[in-house]
Length: 401
Image (tube, rainbow, N blue to C red; front, side, top):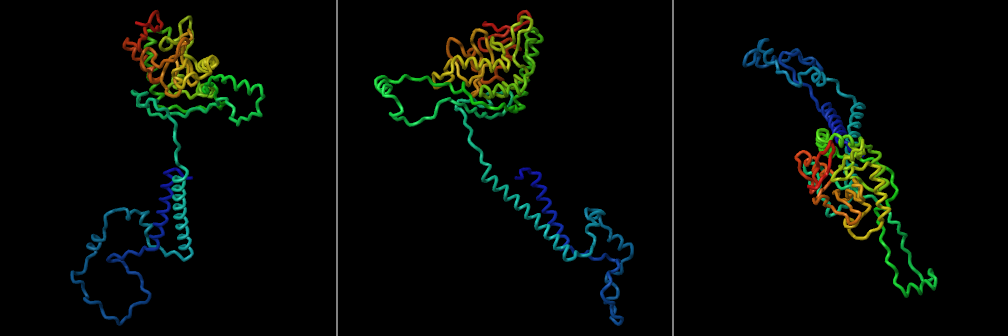
């Protein structure tokens, strides 16, 4: 199916050109002879005894040679170009077979254009209908997530997960022993805990997804601000920043966890793949948490799913843990900084309580927003919620003022 607009224009131009050539060749008549030019020979010579023309002399007089040259001179234009003049020069009319062959080719070109146009209209009307995308009602608009970057993005589809439940089948008394039937009739069945389906994803092949270039530029802009401040004020913490991550490694982690990492998180991991201890310096991180590498994110997600793989509430954001969360930082005491893979905002899960999506006492609507809030606090000496980043002995510390 032809989808290139340029190809459509080329076909249309070819059809118009063929039709124009046919029309010009069939309807062109020779130009009248200019004054002073020798008339074309007639089929038979005039009779000798024909009377002289009347009047013998033109009423306005006989034009001189200079008059004829002056009035015969025309201003240069498109039709005076040698190539155009040669094309429009009088030629012998086309013979019958050539004219018929040219007409057939013109008809074929017109039919091809009409056929391709009709097929395109049919394809657009029948096969080009888009499907509906499932979104969550409380998901914040992209304009709020990247308010300072002008980023446009769309909600990514959720991964399909397998709950592990067996298909329902019709119950029959013949399928159960008599003793078990009596016991079930006397005692109510015990309630079973719901399985956290997000902790049991289907096996999927890794797929490297492109990142919106605007998101990458916005994330890199905030990282440059953070790096500049660290170099000048906390060089030891700057050296703990990880090297750039690999898109393939991110795709593998996504496939194994059954999650889609937001674009801003992936762009950040492609610039700094977490952080590490260097010469006894505490690794760099946000809100007193250590930035995790891609593999640490996957392994920590597995560990949390092994600890709690059940759903205790209809709202996964009110539980202690849910498999749709992406752990991106750890404070070393069992608490984790997480990103909701559906809403994209930043939260924190505490080992002794539930998850909270106001880390530091404020809403942080995206990983990019966390980077920007940190860069602003570093440059202005401000805070991120109730956390204040400060430099001490060449290292970055997060303190409670």
